[in-house]
Length: 395
Ligand code: SAH
Ligand code: SF4
View 1 (tube, rainbow, N blue to C red):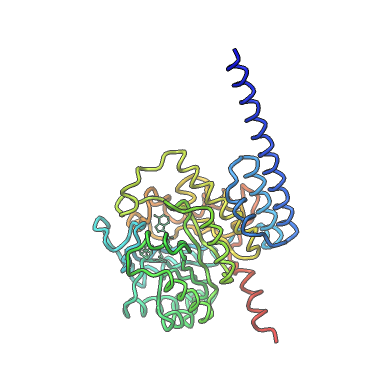
View 2 (cartoon, helix red, strand yellow):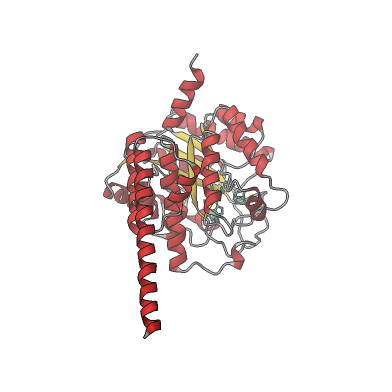
């Protein structure tokens, strides 16, 4: 009897403590969200508190706050970048990636010049304002020259109207300069993680975080709109790591961010140890991806943020959810269907059996369905970039 009374009082006490804690967290979220609405800077501890939210109502409050910041700074327009995955040949061996050079299970391909230009023209005719040309990393002269020719041809054949983003890995200053002069104007190079120990675990010895940072500096020096990003839900990654990632992106003053959750690939050193994600694991990775987008929008305000395809691999409407949490760029696949299954960075990549028209149609419907407009025929450059250039040119 006595024990039962004590047990009853204990559970009452625990419930009371939890209720008080929840109340305190609620007040804190409201305060942080008010600060964000007023455009004030958040302290690292506040950023971390936002990233650690798990209560559904608080999560929704965070997403709503990020959407307000997005609307105020960059509007409710989603810009399309048609992504052309032009080759899965890679000289790198990142331990998470399905097309790493040591994966012998992959059938390698390299599109020729004609194919890449044809796909870019398809994107142009279908009113996509820009394309992203992405591939595994190659640094040989033939590749560098081929990309330069492709960029020049796309510019010429679209009367300079199609925006071109490149995502072709680490290159020399000269290569970045050549591709920029050929007419491409945005470059995406994810830092992946800014935690040196974690970076080491994710990459072989000859891959270097400092070199990656140096490349981002070279891109800025050679006049690109610079994009970077990280993966989240990585084994061993903490919320503190993610705070530091956001602060790094802020410090280097990036113009665009493309980031998404890590998804295992079975034929990689990291992925082979991880059983396929359960529904709960998928949901956790998706939520973390959405939280990162939301918090990054709140902190960096006027940059472009892409809702990564990896979000869609975890949940069918993951990219639209990304737009509702602060992203403003979507990268529909315009790669010819035949090549798609061989560009598998992670397992269960979506849309590998669809063609480009299907992707365009279903995405457009879903985006207008959430009340956003699509910036057809527009480059949709990062507002942050124009502000940055104005400041740099100011006397
Ligand atoms: N080779 C270039 C571009 C292609 S890879 C580069 O590495 O920069 C593009 C992005 O895919 C990488 O930056 C990485 O963040 C992401 N990626 C690779 N493997 C992944 C995985 N298993 N899960 C989620 N994203 C992955
Ligand atoms: Fe190559 Fe990029 Fe994959 Fe690394 S992430 S193995 S560089 S394609």
